[in-house]
Structures are given as C-alpha cells and as structure tokens.
Amino acid sequence: MSYTPMPAIDKQALEKWVPRTKTGKLVMEGKITSLKEVFEKNLPLLEPEIVDYLLPNLKYVRLDAKIVQKMTDAGRRTKFQVVVVVGDEEGFIGIGIGKAKQYTEALAKAIRDAKLNIAPIRRGCGSWECRCSEPHSVPYMVQGKSGSVEIILKPAPRGTGLVVGDVAKAILRLAGISDVWSQSFGHTRTTLNYAKAVVNALHNTYKFTTPIDWSR
Image 1 (spheres, rainbow, N blue to C red):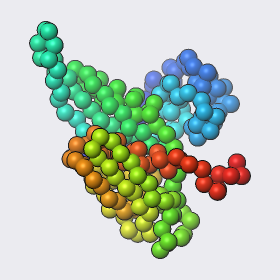
Image 2 (cartoon, one colour):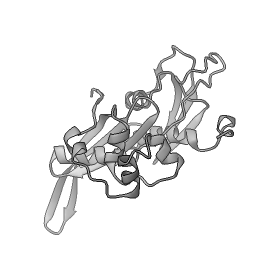
Image 3 (cartoon, one colour):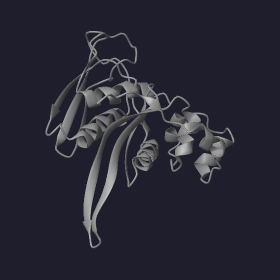
C-alpha cells in the first residue's frame, strides 16, 4: 500500500463555516492565531474547522481500509472501516477512525475524527552523536502503547533516516520527523494498534516539562 499525503482541507466547507463554540469564535475573531495557542490555553477542540483554519497545510494519509461485519437481529451488517492520520509536517499529528456503509463517508468521518484528536509533539535532536539543535528527530527516548503493541522511539543523528515500519514512516513524516531509531514489541501487523502506539509515543513527548519550558 502506498502512503501518499493528500490535502485534508475542504476549502468550500471552510468558507461556509459558522463557529458554534467559544474556541471557534475566538479563532474567527482573530484572537487565536495558532493551534499551539489553543493547547497552551487548554481550550476544547470540538470543531474540525478550527484545525483547517489554523493549519492551512494540513495533509492526511490513509493507513488502512477494510470491511467489518456485525451480526444484528436483522442479519449481518457490513461497513467500511478507514484509519487515517493527519499532520502538517511541522509538529502536529492526529489519528482517526471512521465507519460507514460507503467508503467515501467512512473516509470523511476518519479525517474529521483525526482532526479532533490532533495534538502537538515536541521535536528536537536528542542524539549525542549529532547535537545539531535542529528539530529533525525526537528530543529524547519516548514510549507508546496500544493494545498488545508497544514501540520505543529513540533519537538518531541527522542522515540516519526512519528506521521503522512503513506505517510508522508515514506517521513520522507527517509529524515532521526525518531521523529516528525504533524498537517494537507485540503484534505489529495490526495496523490500527501499531499506528496508535506510534502516535501515542509522539504525544508523550509533551508528557512532562523540560528546562526549555521553564521560562514560559
């Protein structure tokens, strides 16, 4: 499967957007100019249009698409399940799942869910072999887990590349990371759990405060 980034913003829907939440109104009024400011002020993110408005270069990659079935009193119900990850290649990443009878509807639901689950990540150069101070890798070793899958992301020097699986490569590229080493455990062939573990590891880069953040 090819993991080609695609634009994740519907410009026509964005032009017709009428904010219904406090956060959306602050964004429309120009009082909030960046998505990072939304998280710093601990504001709720309940409208995907907020992400579209503040991240015009947002892209998505479809990681998995399959047919799922459920037995009901009326018989077997069949739906499409799509897993999508969105990112701006500069430090924001989110993952979403969508289910529907039609594939296009399931894809739209997955993109919407991923936008609502988007969060910033901390990038840096935590490798003692490099020390270039450029945000090309993770700042320190982080760990993520989902289901039986567990992954450890380790800082790597510039030029190493992404030493991870194909699914993780697509996620890390959307996050804006180009060099990393990894170690994974569990049933990594399960695309959903593997992808969630990688995103969880990236979100854990903000799990605690570093000395750089003390002056804020």
